[in-house]
Amino acid sequence: MEFKHAFHVFVDNFSTIYKLLVYRLIVLAITIGLSCAVLVPAVGCISDTVQYTDLQTSFSALWSDVIALNTADLQARLQAVKDASIAFEHLLSDKSWLVATVIVCMCVVYVIDRFLVGVGNYVTGALVHDKMVMYTKSSFTFTLFKNIKQAAIYAAIFAPITFVYDAICLVIMWAIISVGLKGLSFTLIKIFIVAVLFLVFSAVKFVFITDWLPALIDAKMKQRKAVLYTFARKGKNTLEVLSNSLVLKLIVFALNVAAGIFTFGAGLLLTLPASCLILSSYCFVNYFDRNKKKYFVDEYTVIGPKKEMLVSREEFFKGDE
Image 1: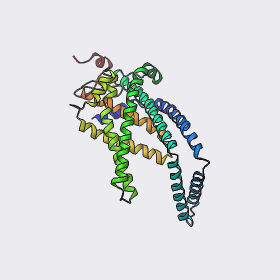
Image 2: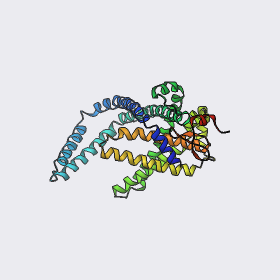
Image 3: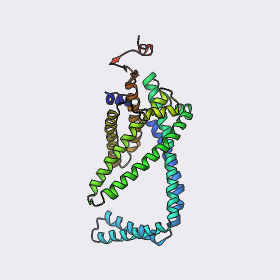
Image 4: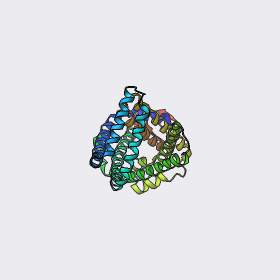
């Protein structure tokens, strides 16, 4: 039933997607701007080198042959790209200080991006909560500024935690693919394993942050208490939530991949904010169901602690007698 109720809440809050899209585009512009500020000077330091010029020239020649379906010199083009790549790797090893600086700066940019995304997640959760509890359609901008302090504190905790977790997951996946599956020559199998690991790691992370926003927004917990509450899994049917999380993450992953491939990326403008909204809807539905709290799934339907029933707004706000 949680999937059914979460989907209804998602549909009922569908207009939030467009507001979240605008916010995410602003965040994307900031992230791209900061990334360019880091990468452009770094590229400028190596763009005049022979190795960089050879790599660019050989790759352009290969791409031109592929576009023109010219297979006669394809093997030679591939070898030229391979040789140029090896020479370029030697150049980067000689400029290890530059590479290290770029990596550190890009990590900082990633944390800033996660911070801004965290603020957006908090606002989205607040909008979903208002609709579920009072069936009130709140303004995204007003909710953002009204909750900016709480959202910023939440995001300041959320960003480094997710960064560390994502970094650990990347290291584990790299170790499995590069070391554990080093002798495996089938690229498709490696891609499949990476996709499975990504889904599992993403679902596990989602399990442990599912109750974070509901604890802050609905229960009005302090940040420290909310963090302890969300990571404490006692009595929360963790395996069931993990199973639901895997299904949700699989659906979200499939929709985003399909949108990226079949619409040449244009569909991601809709599916990415929609993914955030459906995940947020599930978090609150799971929290409300487990705590036996009533909530709206649409204008006329209220989910009670024991059964689904149609009640009036007056009966809903009056409560149980």
